[in-house]
Length: 246
Image (cartoon, rainbow, N blue to C red; front, side):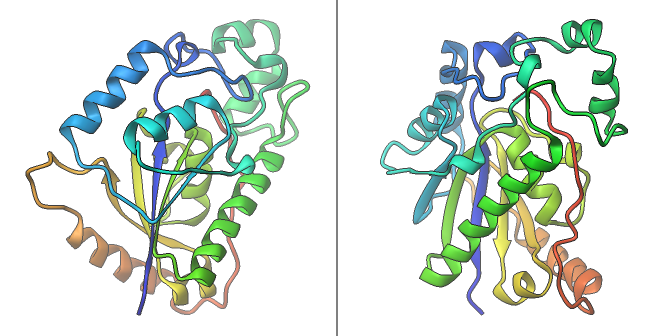
């Protein structure tokens, strides 16, 4: 059976990331250090190629894609933007906590009704990210395009992986460093039945001269998916999660 591979990669660092600030809607470019780090990764490691390349519309993601895939003609997906942190934009966790006691409940996930003042709720953020990801998957299945790269924000990728990734893991368990990420395999039958994808490898792969890794992981994940979802009739099983400064 034909399968579809989606590679999820987090953008490089900005000055805001380096200072530990919450940068969501703010359209910061990559920092000089962030650009150098991506170029070093691309020179040392293998990044998976694809038939189509998707990116968040924000500069840091578009620049990252161009560094890692200079030949790519990216398709911009507005729904892959990072969460809008409202009044918390540009502040550190310490600065926010000092002025807003609701921040502690928001970051712990315990205050479901808490949202960044003037910003985006966790539910709204998750809804638009998941809706956009499902449209990407549906487009691949319809067109027969078997591979894609998505360059986006940490919060965006953690939302996708915690909602659709198999093996199941919590939101923050999918946190990854700049320029890194995960490969997910979409099998049509499993997707149509349970809307999950097999997370089978980390990105980037090994040094350029080595053979690709992760084949054993594919088999283990498929076995786990069959055990967990073989009897299910469908449904996303999505869980509301919190995002962070990416």
